[in-house]
Length: 586
Image (tube, rainbow, N blue to C red; front, side, top):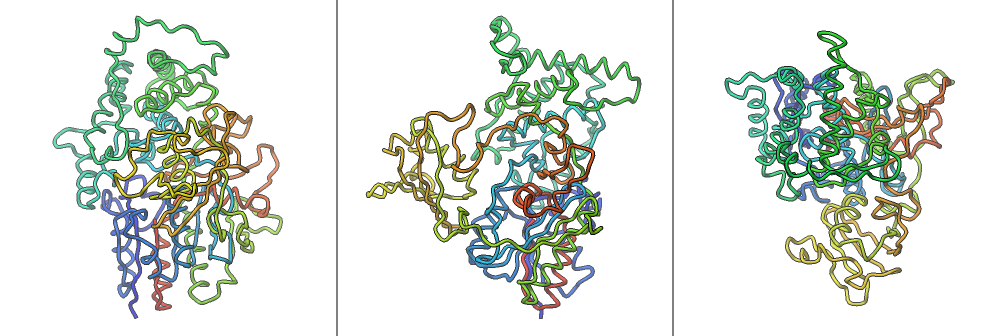
C-alpha cells in the first residue's frame, strides 16, 4: 500500500551543498530542498507517496497530533533549538526518533524512545560552535556568529575563497521569503542582478586597491542597509544599525578615548577604536599579500597579529551593528578556531546507518537498536564502526523525567521578564511559545504566549513581581506538551557576562584558550552546523568513539552536522516495503 511519508525542510539548495550529497544538481540551486529531494526519490521509487513541506519544523502546525501520524521520525537538523524541539515532540507523541550527525570523518547515529532510552536532552551539551549560513550572513544574535563571519571575511578578502564562506547578505534566506518560488527567484536574481556582472568580494576589493574606507562602508553600511530591506527578518528582531565611516570620523575622532587599564588583549575598545584597528589591519594584510606576489593568498592564523587584529575589529564592528556587547581580543581569540570540512563519504555512511536503525524499528525490533559511532581510525579490534547499547533515561533530565524541574541561579533585580523568556526559556530550555505563572498562591501570569497579553511585563525585573530567592515558576509550552518547574535561586555573585546559571552545570560563557587543541575549538564548515569531536592534542591516538561511556554525552550534543538528504530516499524505500509511515526532518 502507498502509505504517506513526509519530508520537512525550510532550506533551499545552495551551490556549496552540491559537494556533499547526491540528490541535488547544479540546475536545482535556489529550489526547495524538500521538493527536489522528493522528486529525486520518486525517480527510483515511483510508487512512494511523499509529501514535501518547504517549512520550518518549529511551525505550530506541526503539533503533537501531526507527529502521531508517523511510526518513525528521522532527524537531520542543523541547530540545537530544532533538535530539542523535535526531541520533545517525539516524547510527547511517544514516537521513536533517530538522531544523527557528522563532523569531518566522525559521525554517529542513535535511537531515542520515550521511557526506554536517554532523550536528546538527558545529558548537557557543549556550546554550539557553528550555525546556519543565513544566521551568519543575515541575522547574527551572538558574538560567535560575528566572529565566524569575520573569519569568513578574511578568507574572502585575503585567503582562499570558499562558497561555504560567503559573507554578503543571503538574498535566498528562506525566512525572508517563505514561498518556495519567491526564494528560488531571489536566488536566481542574486546570481544575475540584471545586466550587472557580479564579481567576487576579493575581485572587488582588489579593484579598490584594498581601500579600507570603501571596504568599511561596503561591509558595515551598504550591506546592512540592504539587509534592512528584507523586512520580514526584523518583525521579531531588533534591526541592525548601519555604520558610516565619515560620520564616525566626524563624531568620534575628536573624542580621544582614554587608555583602558589592564592587559591590552583584555581591553574592549570603543567603536572608533575598532574602526582604526580595521583600517590598520587591512593595510598591513594588503602589504603582506602584495609581497607574496600576484595570485597569492594568506592563511588565517590566530597567532598572526594582523590576521587576529582584522578578525577582532570586523567581528566587534558587526557586534555593535547588531546591538551586542563587544568583546576583547582575548575573548575573540579564544572563540575562534579551525575549519572542519563536510565529507560526502561520511554523510553517506551515516545515512546508511540511519536506514538500518529505521528498519529495526519498523520491524518491531526496537530492543536491538544501538548507538553507532563512525570512527576516524580503527579501534583495537580494527573496527571503524562501534555499536553501543542505548543508555536508559536520566532520572535528572529536565525534559523526559516524570516531573521536570530545574534550579536557575540569577539576580532577580537585574533579570528582566524578556530575558527570562528569550534567554532562559527559549534559548536555554528550548521552549517555543512559553506561558509562565508564578506559584504564589494567586497564579500570577508572568508570560503569556498569546500576543499582546503580557508585553507590558517585558522590561520589568523579576523582583518587581515579588519573585525572590526560593520562588517557583511554572513554565508551560502547549505546542510541545511540556511543563517545567523552575526554582529561582537569587544571587548577586554571577561571573562577568553571565546572566544566569543552571545549577549543576558550568556557566555559559566563552571557553578559556587551550594550547595545542585547535581541533577542540573547531568550527565546522561544510554544512553550517556545529561539531566538536574529541581529539587528543598529543601524538598518540585516543579516539573518543572507542570510549563511549566517558564521551557519549559530549559527542551526542556536539556533533550536529546535518546528515545528507540521501537518507530520505533510503528511509522512504524502507518504509514503503513495510507499508508504514515515516517522517523525515531536515
